[in-house]
Amino acid sequence: MTGRTTAITGIGELTTNDPGLGLVRDAVVVLQGDRIVWVGHAPVAPAADSVVDVGGRAVLPGWVDSHTHLVVAGDRTAEFEARMAGEPYRAGGIATTVEATRAATDDDLETTLVRHVGEAVRQGTTYLETKTGYGLTVADEVRAARIAARHADEVTYLGAHLVPPGADEESYVDLVCGDMLEAVAPHAGWADVFCERGAFDETQAERIVRAARARGLGVRVHGNQLGHGPGVQVAVRNGAASVDHCTYLSDEDVEALAGSDTVATLLPACDLSTRQPPAPARRLLDAGATVALASNANPGSSYTTSMAFCVATAVLQMGMTVREAVWAATAGGARALRRHPADARAGQTGDGAVGVVRAGARADLHVLDAPSATHLAYRPGVPLTWAVWRAGTRVV
Ligand SMILES: [Zn+2]
Image (cartoon, rainbow, N blue to C red; front, top):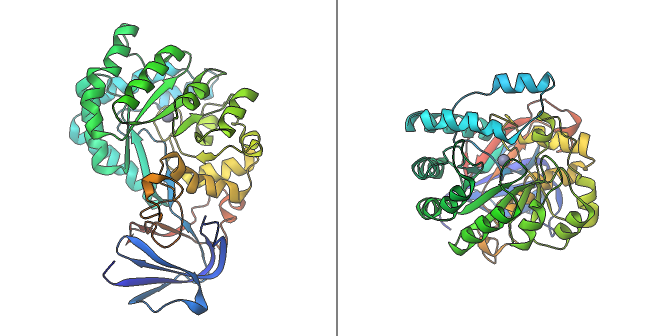
């Protein structure tokens, strides 16, 4: 590694998510290029070319938002309003966004995506996944994946979001596993399927996941959002990196997750915005499952890019401790994207890993205007982001 070094000094409380370093008080982090090169206690810190003193503030890894849907057009304010007046949330609402997204120009889609990614970054998100899934034709899904790849860190193919209105179910599944997969795969690292009543059933989901794996994509599943169902079992059985939502879990589901590498990604802002009960975070954690938190930012069921809001909600409503929630929104997201130091994808030395603060990891840091990360839940709704470094560049 060459180039100038920058030392972030005066860190009152540093959350590293590194088992060896833990929580460090009076800490210094040294950055070089897009990497962290040194982490430790101030008295033994090496000299650096430049210094940024954060004045006793708390520092944590940037948020890793492992679940968003941001290649979108249109507005679902009216649907939200109706839901708040008592209408239930249904998977079919996705069709509204599909119609608007197909009608949008490439420029419109890109402008909207850039605006939302910028909004997320200003709130401390430094690594972001986004999905296709509002195109649902070969051309529209390829277009979404291409645009996503220009601005998101990870791209997921979600042709299996919904059977588009008017299409025959089985022929659509054939398309998702066939021509559409072939066309989108070069632009995506992941494939996802919405396994839920009103979307894709167990047999269809299983077929889609297997086809994507055979094509070399990592897999993830939307499951158990609107009721009990087979999503978790399909995910675990097929080695999915994560199963997202997990609002309704049986004891068998919790057990399967605890005994697997599949991360349970909880989406507290979505549960709240659809007036579902909160996902059973405590049961999952107590059983030993790996839990991630993500925003599920999308205009239908969870229109927020705020990971701090998700953390506060997870603590205040789902029984997670602040430390568990912060870990889940950083290192947990990294695990769900297989970018944690424990994952082979990040390299054996954790080179370029995200969600952690340690030498070799990507220089993604979030400085809070608070003395401790506890303030994220203690002061809910207050914008606490004071500075952000993304891949070594200060962006806030
Ligand atoms: Zn989603």
